[in-house]
Length: 102
Image 1 (cartoon, helix red, strand yellow):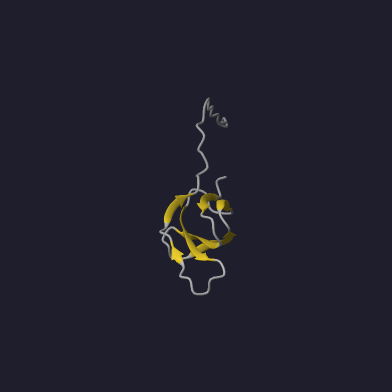
Image 2 (cartoon, rainbow, N blue to C red; image 1 turned 90 degrees about the vertical axis):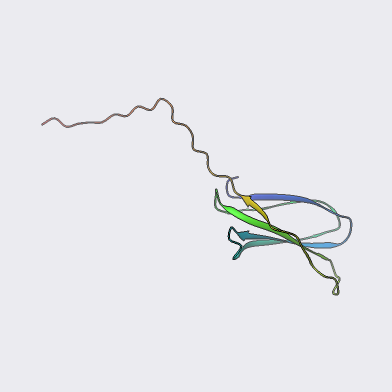
């Protein structure tokens, strides 16, 4: 849960290939990519094994499947952040210390 990003989108009817890119926060390197070939419908996938509490950027590239002359469409980046582990409140804390006597 804390080390993943789950995304979903509805693909239009048609034969399309989607390349989903996950970039680091500075957008200087690709962390991971996934390729989905779809004929339409809801697409849900996850990037896993990420660092908790970290910002990433995700974008989708779309091309018509099997079309050698078709141009690729590149969507804008969307910034996402993995969840951070919660810091649970400490209740009823008792601190004890042993002090040696001389």
